[in-house]
Image (cartoon, rainbow, N blue to C red; front, side):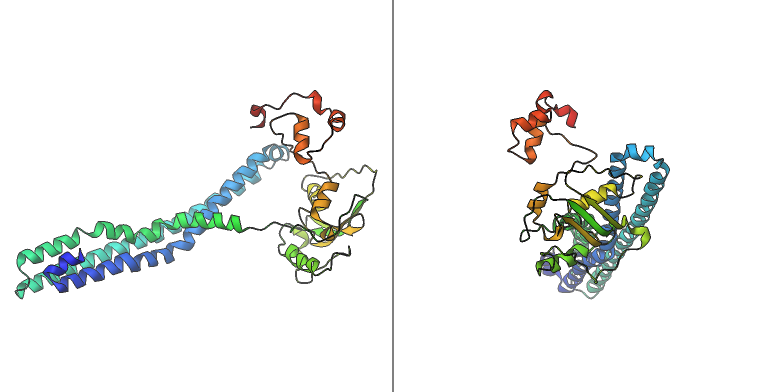
Amino acid sequence: MLAFIGAHSLPLAAIALAGYLVLGAVMPIVSSKLCGNASRASRDAAGSISAYVLDGLRGLAETVQFAGASKRSAGLAAQTDAMGSMDRSLHVRSAAVEGLADALVLLTSLAMIATSLGLFAAGDPSFSSAFICSFAYLSSFGPVLAVCRLGTSLQATLASGARVLDLLDEGPQTVDVADGADVSFGGAACEHVTFSYGVRGVSEARGALRGAGAASSGAPVHSSACALPSKDDRILDDVSIAFEPGEMVCVTGRSGSGKSTLLKLLMRFWDPTSGAVKMSGRDLRGVNTASLRSSIGYMTQDTHLFVGTIGDNLRIARELVSHRSSTCAFADRFYSVERSRIS
């Protein structure tokens, strides 16, 4: 289009070039700056609502049992209101970008028409050339406006992609130990254990100390770089308990008191905020993860069965489960699990 207009008049081609550069290059950058953070916040809010609803559905029985339906509803309403506010902010910014683009189109169009009339009055170009250039320029804004709106329309897609990349880059809560000690189960213990899900960075700090050899001796590792959480945030607070071989220990407490968290610490799914969790006298941060997981079994409240017999499910964790072990677990007396039962 620039070549076509330039063949009739270079001043008109210069006006067209300026309009194309502003609408096709500058405006996408401006709209991206204005809408980028708002789009990411809106996508994050949508993801939080989805996770909140899914979590509520999974724990629906517990929510009803402990009369938490009103609290969950209030939480969902608060998140929905927050997302609505973010969407309105994004809509206002998008509308501002659209209005600015329309204003620029109008200004450049008026400049093109006024310049065409001025040049025609001066005798160059002819009326037909001035009219054709102005009409061609006004009819060429479809693709240019599409590029102009690209900065706004792509923000939602870019925000979703950024969330996926963040998920791929997320590291494990605890780094597996491969250069520690192999131990067999000779008892487990928690010594002055404090834990909070809100404190992050403790595992990384202790992992660095363990890599330097601080935890290989089995001594508790303390990090002064991370402050302890407040009393209200602590799931476990200065807990000490021992599990001796051959004992059957029952840990009881109300819902949310930290029973499952205690077991997860024994499996080293998490590291304690302070204190130490030990097995056979060694701090778990100095025990090889493969050795730890082969010495301790963990069954959650919600057990999941795959297609096959109970014996087949037992062999998923250990392929060498003997026929005698399967028989003792009554695994051979159960029918195969149907797919419809797993869904």
